Amino acid sequence: MIVQAVVVPQPPLLLPALSPGANAELEALRAACVRAVRGLAAVTREWVAVGAGDHERVIEGVCGTFRGYGADVPVRLSRDAVTPEVLPLPALVAGWLREQAGAESVRVHLADGDPADCERLGKRLAHGECTGLLVLADGSNRHGPKSPGSEDERAPGFDDAIARALENADTAALRALDPALATELGAGGRAPWQALAGTGDDWRGGLLYSAAPFGVGYHVAVWERG
Image 1 (spheres, helix red, strand yellow):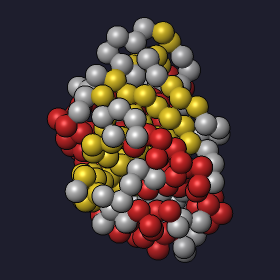
Image 2 (cartoon, one colour):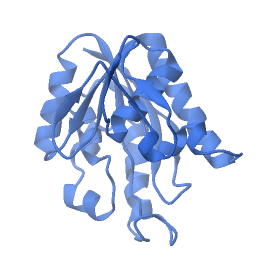
Image 3 (cartoon, rainbow, N blue to C red):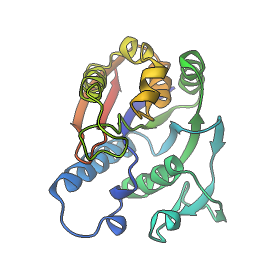
Image 4 (tube, one colour):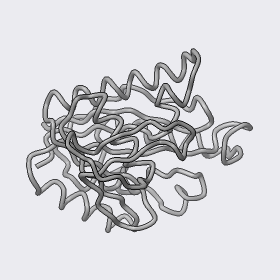
């Protein structure tokens, strides 16, 4: 079963090599992510992860690099991984966070489906081996006039609702997310959040970070059983 779940965003700028120089907002985000995953590793060093993808896929036991994002920073999905592969962003960030936390391995599931499909994925993961769950999910990319997706006045309300759901472990609210609205708002985390909702309702939530410092909604949360 999933013994603990951690929700983090997946901007490549989490890596210091991709974001040189001091930036208080970025440092706060990075610190919250590292704190969350180190807590997860303290509970279990074997992880599964869920991120968004163009199609369902499972990635494990390989290594990759952030070269495509501007810095040749290698990452491994397990300590003994030697097979190189061109990895999608969720797998790269999962590998980097695994290394920051000192976990043994992370198996990455890419989710691409309607809410029912995502919930079924969460249920499958919840009934698997005893492990930790890493959820890689960004909010709307339409916060403010300089946002990547151009400003949309609905973005703050959308991410405020996500923050409340994560803080309160409100799986019903996550299940109810509208895929069409999430797409319109450039919120790539919809499918991973709904997979999290499928892992069960017996959670206690806690929010470590929630902001949109670069025009994108980022949330860091920890869910514990009970």
